[in-house]
Image (cartoon, rainbow, N blue to C red; front, side, top):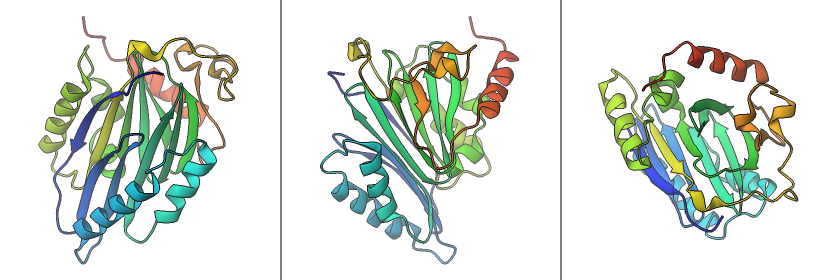
Length: 239
């Protein structure tokens, strides 16, 4: 991949006890969410972002290294640490706490990761990834998040998601990052270790053929993925 992804940021309302923010570095992207019933969430969240920024100054070159970076900064009050690092054609994603990772490929939209775990996979031209914190996932359903796409830029998608969040009676501390990978991604090399084909596992859904759970501590089950697909089929597609 020769270029950086286009990026959109979603940040919901914050309080003294619940705070969320996105992380946008030259070679890493993510979302964090912290909560402290006695207050101080903002200070703790800023400190967490500072720690992550220092450790991600040099981009991790493997999922194992990214896992180690994220594990080093997990502490009290952390609801979500979700980091994505593109390395060539491959994405490394690590999630601690709770949250979700979504993939938009063509007209398909599905959850790749739900809850703590790690995944890696090859990105394809036109793919969009959403990195969502715990409260974002609680406030917006899979269907609501997937419905905002209509040939929009990441900034426009992020703006729609932000408006949806602010219409909810809850959602404090929500944060999400929208990453869109352009047509310059090019041809995926077959020699990449992450090139195990997802279609061997989900035979009817080839849109995920180059993105698969790998070395996951707790990863998305195939039954959850199939349930997501069934729910989406029940919603009429926009013209």
